Image 1 (cartoon, helix red, strand yellow):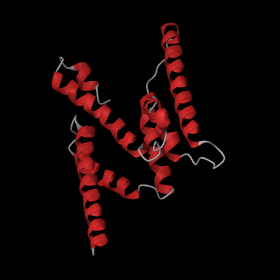
Image 2 (cartoon, helix red, strand yellow):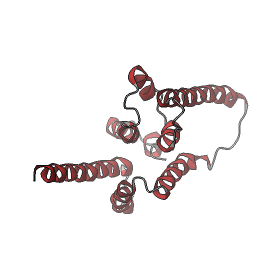
Image 3 (tube, rainbow, N blue to C red):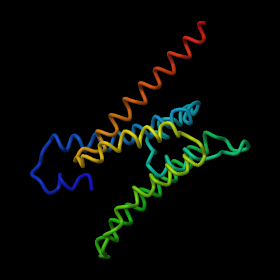
Image 4 (tube, one colour):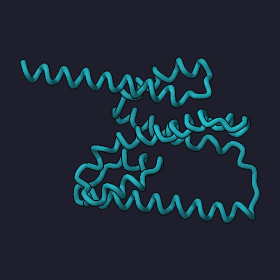
Length: 179
């Protein structure tokens, strides 16, 4: 949906750049959320980063790893298998897509549904409510204006607000520690 304008209009490098930023900024936020989970993963860390997909993020962010399971290898195997399934599914889909034709209208909601499920699970588990509220508050005014760059503007605003709040909290902790 975000790229419809890009496909219908003559090539515009600025809009292509904005779309690239939009897609990559989403992955940046997912990556930032996983920094603490990927701590002490040693040589597996680059692979965990490479294998990150939206689905992997969804599974690993909410996973409760039992104590008798090696956390590093759990993260790695889930990430690897998810990426492998994603790759094989794409390959099979491309090959079958050449032979089987069907109407895909209505399937564009899947990614939106995934993020709604992640949001709802985190809300119900009391995780990240502050970030969720900030996301909703920052996105609502931008949504009203129906701009083509909704996601990038929302991400910039959310990132700025969360950074400001983080720095204020960090400053307050340092001040309390020094008192």
